[in-house]
Amino acid sequence: MGAPVLNGPFTMPMFRNFVPRKLQPWIYVFMAVTFQLSGGLYLGTLNQMVGETTLMREDLLMCLYANLAGMAIYFPLLFRMKFRFTNKTLLLAAAGGVLASNLIAPHITYLPLLWGICFIEGICKIQGTFECMSNIQLWMTPKRDFTVFFPLLHIIILGSMQLSDLLCTYLMYHYHWSYMHGFIAAIMLINLMILQTCTRHFRLMKKFPLFGIDWLGAILWACLLLEIAYFFDYGDWYDWWNSPVIRQLAVAIGITFLLCIWRMLTIRHPFLEPRMWTYRHLVPILILITLVEAFLATERVLEEVFYEEVMHYTETVSVQLDWLTLGGILTGCLFAYWWMHIKRFSYIRLLSIGIIGLIGYLLGYYFTLSGEIHISQLYLPTACRGFAYAILSATFMVCLEEIMTFQHFFQALSVFNMLHMVVGGVIGSALYTQGLAYYLPDNMARYGAAIDRVSFSRHPFPLGEYMESFVSQMMEISIKQIYGWAGYACIFLLLLFLLYDAPVRKELKLMPGWRSLRKEIARSFQKNPSRKTNEPRE
Image (cartoon, rainbow, N blue to C red):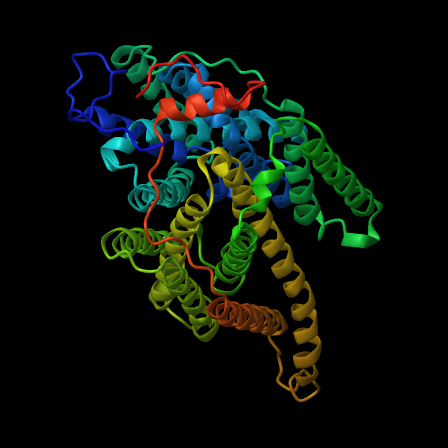
C-alpha cells in the first residue's frame, strides 16, 4: 500500500466554498491548539484550588492523570471513529465535550465524578486534535512523511502545554482560577460556531460500522491505568504498605492485569492484540520512554518544592521559566526535523542527543540550585529540559511508527502514551516524593547537631528566623542530593543506550491512504481475509 498520489493542490472538501482555500488548514491548526490548551483541571492553579476547595493536592493530580488516561486509552479507536462518522460530527462532539467538561468541573467536589469528567475530557481532547491534524497531514507533508509530521505536531502539543500553564497562571493572578475554565469554554464556543458555519458533512469513503471493537477490553485497560495512577499518587499519603488501602489496591491491580491479559489472549479482536507486542525493539522503546518520563517528573516535584519552599517564588515569578521551556521545545522540534528529515541522520544518535540534553538539565539544576541565585541562572537548564523533551518525544514516535505496521501502530501508540503520559510520570513523582521524605529528616538530624549551647549564647536569640533559614537550607541540600542521583542514573542510561545497537530502517516506508486503511480493517473482520472487497481502488 503506497501513499496516495495527489493530482492537484491540497484541498479540504469539508469546508464550504466561501472559506478561502489558503485559510482552511490554518483554521484546523487553530482548533488543534485550542483543544491542546484544554484540560479537566489545570495544574497552574493547583495551590489556589487546594486552598479554596476541600480537595487535596493528590486529588487534583489524580484529575490530571485521569485526563491523560482518557487520551492514552482512546488511540486505538481514533480511526474507527474517523471511518464511521464525518469530520464535522467528530469535531462538534469533541468541542461540545470539552465545553461541557470545563463548565462542570469547577463546581464538582465528588472525586469519582470529577475524575470521570476529566477522563471524558481527555477523550474529547485527543479526538479533536486527531481530527484536525489528520485532515491537514497532507498539507504538512504531501508524502505522509512522519519525520516531518511528528516534529511539527509536537510543536503544537508541547507548545500548547506551556501556553496553557502561562494562561491559567496569569488568569488566576489577575482574576480567579475558575476563569481558565471560562476561557476554554469561550474558545470552544468559537470552535463550534466555526464548525457550524464554515464546514459541512463530507465522507471521503463509505461509512464503516463500529462492530468488532473490544469495549470491555478498553474498559479493563483504562481501569488498570487509573489504578496504577491512584496507587502511586496516593501511596505517600496512605503511608504505602502500612495502609490496608494500598495493599488491597495492589491486589486489585494484579487481578485487573490478569483479566486484561486473559481477554487479550482469548478473543478474536482484543483491544490490544498479542501480535502488537512481538515487534522487535518495541519493548526497549517503551522502557526508555518510561524512564525518560520518570526523570522529567522532577519538574512537578523537586522544582516546585524549590520554587515555593526555598526561593519563595510566587506563581507569576516561577511561570516565567515556561517561556524558556517553550523556546527549548521549539528548538528541539526544529532540530529533530532537521536531523531526521533534511539530513536523514541516525535516529539512535538523535535519541542520544536528547538524553544528553536531559543530563544537562539534571546536572544544571544540581550545580545551580541555591537559595542565593537569581532566576535567570535557571534559564539554561530549563531550556535544556524543553529541548530534550521535544527531541525524545518526536523521535520515539517516529521510531515506533517505523518498526510497526500501521495495523498495530495506534495500539502501540496507546501503550506508548499510557507509559509516556501517566505511568512514567506518576512513578517518578512517587520516587522523588519518597526521596524528599527520606533525605529531609536525615539531613536535619545530621546538620542539627551543629545547634548547641554556643549557637544559643546570643541574647536575645532569633529562634524563629534561625529555624526558618535552617529548614530552607536542609530542603535545598535534599533537593540537590536527589537531582544528583537522578543525574547519575541518567548518565548510566546514556552509557547503556550507547552500547545498545537498534538500527531503524534508513529508507522510510510509504504510508497508506485512508481508503486503503479502511479496506485493511474491513478485511480483518471477514471470515476469509483474502477475499477482495468491491470498493474502488485509490
